[in-house]
Length: 243
Image (cartoon, rainbow, N blue to C red; front, top):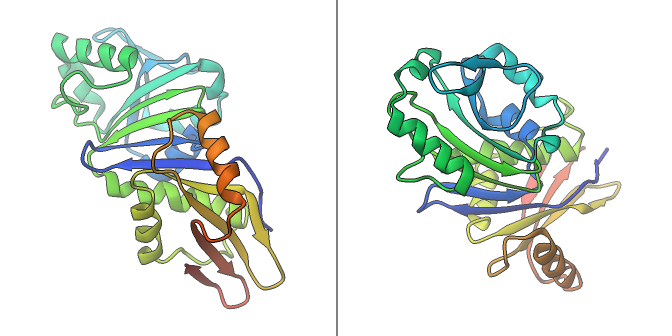
């Protein structure tokens, strides 16, 4: 069963170390990218269940609370900004300068000097508005974002059911590389037949990073079958293809 949904725009900037997206919500990112030992320091947002950290004046979600946070209506926060905390003790080591840098990042949606702090050893600086309306994620290893791509694709192709074969690494690499400069995974217009299920991946190289501009360009490209790539899955053979 293919689950249609909103298109997902991805722009990978490996040089600057971030991924910009629309259509990739926090729930998907957390499921794919966060390990079970990491908590979250909330820079902007108002989770229902959070601890107060007196050292930084930020809210803190311990590792065991992250799954519940992912089930909350993050869209309702408006701005949602956070850094992961692999070791909770690191919060106590935050300097005043680091706290100021986090406040700047949450307000300006870009790091002041760099996205990673020595005290907490974060892997991510996550800056988003209205959940999946747009998100900008700075990452120590940008190529690890392939896990988020795989999670999002599997979610739509069989609703995340276990019967779906893993996406081969070389195809995830190909989708990731194609997303450099911008691409849309068109889950809205997926193809379903008795032989295969497929989505079209459309290039978005020189498009303003706003939903309206992306949808306008996507609508234009949908009329030309020669534009873009196809990611397809054949359930009988459990084979993926990228062409």
